[in-house]
Every structure is written in C-alpha cells, then in structure tokens.
Image 1 (cartoon, rainbow, N blue to C red):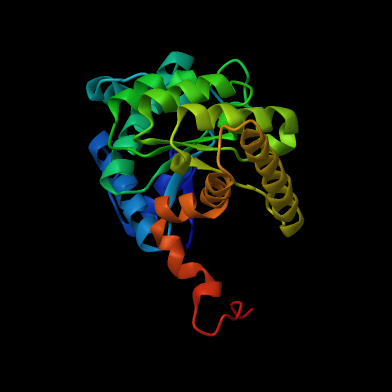
Image 2: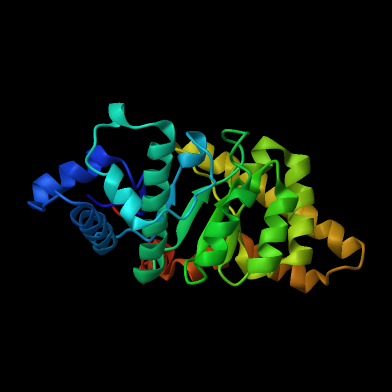
Length: 269
C-alpha cells in the first residue's frame, strides 16, 4: 500500500493481518512491537511522510506511561476478558511506543485534538506525552478547538517540537480561527503554524483553502493596521502558513510538487 500518512496505528486486526502476510510472529508482546515497527518502516519506505491518530474521537487523550511488564500481562487476552481500565492501559502503552518510533523513524506525529469527544480531547491531556518525548515532532490538529488558548500555551512552552495545524478551524468558527491566528502568532514562531483541509473530495479541499486563506489574510491585515506587523512580514507569514512550513516539516513532499518539474505539467491521469 502507498500512504502519505500512517493512521489508526494500533488497530490490532490490521497489525495481525500484516503479520500474517509478512509471516511475522505475534506470540509475545515483543513480537507484536516488532510487527508495529516493521509496519511503520514499510509504510515510510512506501511514501508515508508522517503518522496520525484519530483516537480523540473514541477515547481520552490522556495517555499514561504504562510499564511494559503491565502491558505484557494484558497482551494476548481476549478483549471480552479485559476491563475498561486494562484496555486503556494497553492502548496507552502502545501509543507511547509509537511516539518513540515517530522520533526514531523521523515521521512527525499528527494528533487530532479538540472537536471530538469533548470530555477528553483537550490538548492539555497530551502534556505528559509531549514533555517526555522532546525528539518527537507533534502536530496538534484543529488548533485544539475550542481550547485554542491552551494550544497556544503548549506551543509557548514546547515550541521546538510542537506544531499547530488549524485544519477545519476556519470552517468550524471563522471568528475563533481569526482570533486564534492572532493569538498564536504572539506566543509561537510563525514557522510552526500550518493549515489543512482534511477532506475526501476536491470541493471540500477547495472550500477549506479559500476559507483559510481569507481568514488568515484578515488576521494578518488587522495586525498590520494596528502596527504589530510590517506588511512584508505579514506576507511572509502568510506564505509560511499556507505552504512553506509544511514543506519544511515534510521535505519528502517537495519532489511531489509537479509545478516544480521542468515541464510544469500536471501529473498524467
């Protein structure tokens, strides 16, 4: 398979199917961890540029550090025999392992935050994971909506290895998105702010692009009018957010931009 993003990383059925096809053992927890690592390595070799988890829609983002010995006692048991606490413990353990592999394989880690299960998707729940893994490049989706201030605080403290992706934010709340852009640019470096469409059809991508471009332009223009930015700096930041920051974080994508090819022709169908 060819993927740009490896997501839903801990679905056991997917891992075990991959293990069967690759003839890899799965008898022990160490076997299973080796399967996950091989799965990610193969995905990267096939063109994936980052990892992604959407678990904020299913459970809390509070991932506790679970000892391997504890996870080994859970592994291999049927889910029907596990308590909810044991299920969470094993998921927590696997997420920490994937976070480690994210750094090792140099694959940034996209995490959906906010706009999910409201009772557990506050990005502040990720603080222990972020603090303990300074070599992992974390990308916080949706800007943490509605917790945009909390996301900015995380960036202020851990801006060296955290990025904000405002995906969906301008279409969720245009007003909040404009305020978020202005607040974030006061507490974080402009080269760590990105946007995204995260749509499955061209109309959605086009609409998200137009919404984001207009929203960001208005936010920057207001800063220029207030004397907080020079116009040349606002234009530079706009290009960073809309294009350059993603290419800096995912340099593999540069070779996939057909407009930079010698003949300047779109890819053939």
